[in-house]
Image 1 (tube, rainbow, N blue to C red):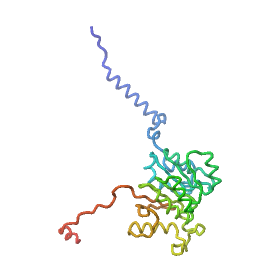
Image 2 (image 1 turned 90 degrees about the vertical axis):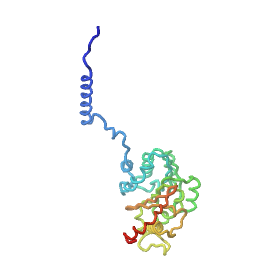
Image 3 (image 1 turned 30 degrees about the horizontal axis):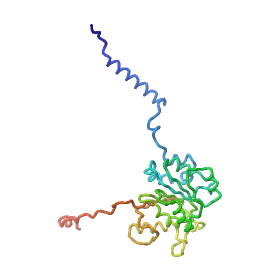
Image 4 (image 1 turned 135 degrees about the vertical axis):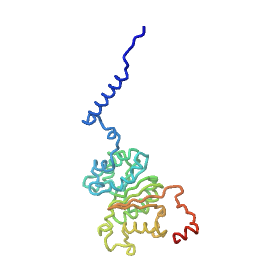
Length: 275
């Protein structure tokens, strides 16, 4: 004899509805973690603020870096920053910690002028390769390129900020940036400081061009096809983005990127639009 059991579907649906109600109640009270919060990566600003770097405490560079760096974040990249922070009041390491957390797969390099500070810091860290030298020394820069192998995805100049240092670093290191990579120069306000080789009387004609003046020439070259700027690879600058105290330079990616020539409009179209 068959035994008839009650239909279970209404019971099952009732149990599911009750569980969903309980979960929703806990979620509203903070009892259930928000999945988005668990998986969301902290922003550049959040990581930079965590380590106290002046990139966000004294400047607003996060507006620049949040535009371009996220595309590299989960990739294996090679990065150079000029300036370990030895001359900062909070000491070296803020940018070091920032980059290692923000870029988990970064091969990180630094150039630092203060040899004693750099050696001391290098002894207690293993997350970066540190070179010591003057970024205005052209011989040192070429030796660095050879020893490091170049081929950087990202370079950031946060070094001594003098005109000689900023200009020579860009002129020599730009060729080591990979196609599609970026070069950033911070603290460009020093172009207007006499103490750093800038100021109102500085000019190329006087033999003391400022970095801002060089950038203006690069913009003119990009749009006029001129040859005012002659350093190695200058023609591969595809874009320049500037904001307060920092500029970013984008290197032409590999592959075809020339504008496509449109067909000439027919005579009827030319007559209609006065062409």
